[in-house]
Figure 1 (cartoon, rainbow, N blue to C red):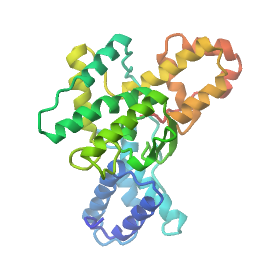
Figure 2: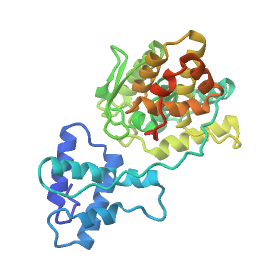
Figure 3: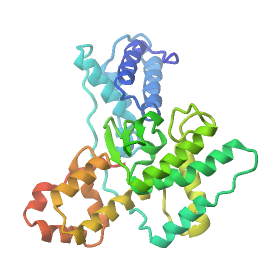
Length: 323
């Protein structure tokens, strides 16, 4: 990165190149924070050419404006940088401790079938301006993008950063490489979703024949968080009103809840289905999937009735790694 200017810039550049070569560099999530850390070191420790504990402790200290989760998000790349250096005996600096996440108060929106039907109908009825390629791309992309979230449980970031080369339409498999943290996982598509992606790929390839990202903007880049937020809000509120507080990420929660609710009637094998859902959704630990139980009415009691003593052994109380 040519815009790095601290005395430890060469070490940071080596770290970034290593991550890129390993397929584990998430530029939107880590690029800005590592650059800000570099500028902090340049401004406050201009003569230092090696990493110091004081640099890390000062930068990683929780700020008044931060919650524990946001502090962890800001500093996760610094912890990875230190791990990289320590593994190569390039530093003895210790990484900052991971802060315990605060209890969650947000309750995801509980979608109804009618709400979703109205929303997707509105997605399908987008009218592009004649002769404007960017609006034609939007018309083609939005119905498919949000249906992929709905049918797969992908994180919005995973869908935004999904590269064309990582979507296997012959076998209906998505290789999710740009995920939360550094976890790679695979998502098997339903046949109807895979066929929809095939039609989309064929149509969009006529407008963007050499695209890098599966969903690529008219600027030949991935879509931003604001693009997802603005388009979801505009379409959702148009047909479901401003009173609804739904956000795009709630679609992922809906995916989990629908799957979990289906287990109740199917006489499910608890551990198997939990494992499948956890891996498909990219949870690092199976316990993280437990978060959804608290927002599914009576599900926790049902699971306890079905699993008795095994429930607490399989699903202990832990911190969630979900966004």
